Image (cartoon, rainbow, N blue to C red; front, side, top):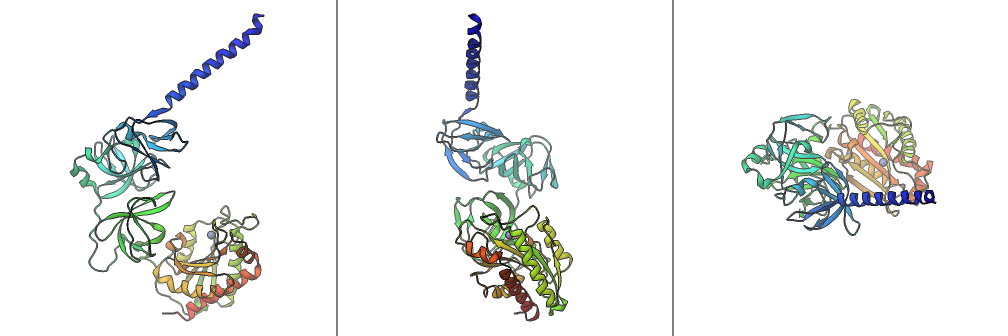
Amino acid sequence: MTRKYFPLFISFMLLLISGLSILGLINQATIKLDTEVPITLREEPGTNQVAIAELEPGTEYQIQKSENNWLLIETQNQQTGWIPNWQLENPMITDDQSLAGQATDNTVLYAEDNVSSIALENIPPDTYFPIQHENNGWAQVEYAGRIGYVQSRFVHILSRDEVPQEELEKQEVIPEEIAEEEELDENTVIMRQANQVFLEQPDYDSEVLYNPDMYEEFQFISATENEQGEFYLVANSNGNRGYIESRVASLANDSINHQNEQKVHSMNDAVIVIDAGHGGTDPGAISQDQSTYEKNVTLSTAIFLQNYLEEMGATVIQTRADDMDVSLADRANLSNQNQADVFVSLHYDAGYDPALSGTTSYYYHQADYDLAQSVNEQLTQGPLNNHGVLFGNFQVLRDNQQPALLLELGYMSNPQDLGYIRSEEYQQNIAQAIANGIRNQIENPTD
Ligand SMILES: [Zn+2]
């Protein structure tokens, strides 16, 4: 009889032990905000990431994970987000935007937030410096007049109020006085679209300080990326700092080596690089029924375009001849190395809204606007509506020192557009239109 009850007793004990250990874990994984000020809860572990709530002092939360001195916590209404553990440990830090650091050891200032990037400087122990933001174990800092990154585990994070002002000033990056002359220096950022925003933080929800004018110039300070995209921290002509989206801005530096003059005036002399977008492991957009991949239709369109251009006498180079991976940098390099007279990148669009439809021509360097205009004029004669010529900050254009444009030739997410995109006839017609537009620009430039 006793043997019969023994397993029951064991099970009961096991239950009790596991119950206790679960209680222990819960106890261990709860945190009470012993702070004097609210703590900002962020979507990702970074002070430059999107703020989702302010957590009041004294409130308690469950910790789900701890990583790089950030805690992933869950609120009572099941909302999760990250708070900086280092802020909980230092009551002097009253907000996560005016931070300073003190090196705890010899540490390296890196060009980017990884240890394989270029080492810019060695920072001796005890040195103070301003921190612009701390993101998942890396602090973006100003040191010796330059911007770089240090590993946060070698940094004691402080409030700027705790550090002598002159110690911070020593390290600060001073945006150069914007020249009175219209001369652009390599650190000039130019706003390329109208109705944009100058933000207090790299976050669309932060305060809009004002709406910059198209072609307004800024001094570049640094670039930062988060899940909303890439932002440039810039100073305007009054010295005010703020963030603009890199998508709508260009760096004067990018156009320094750009070939602005059209060198040939006959298709027989022209070298044209055709870039079939995507390829290999990168399918690009995929139709909703999974049957059509952007990488395949860009390639077939590219081959039609090659035939038309060769018929017109041009020498054609393709960035890829079949379904293969080619990096964006290599695509632009191929154009640069061959001193292409035209680089044209072919794409088909996709959007969340199935109603989106039509074609668009993009350029990056101001000098390439006329080329984009000439090709786009031909696209307007196609069956799909046209969105005109737009500025686009695409790497294949940005890195291109040769006249370059990128074409979006219809929306794969739109059933009607997709019907056209799949048809050989549309691909041939659009390829012919592009070839005509390129020839018009080469043989009868508008300027
Ligand atoms: Zn694409």
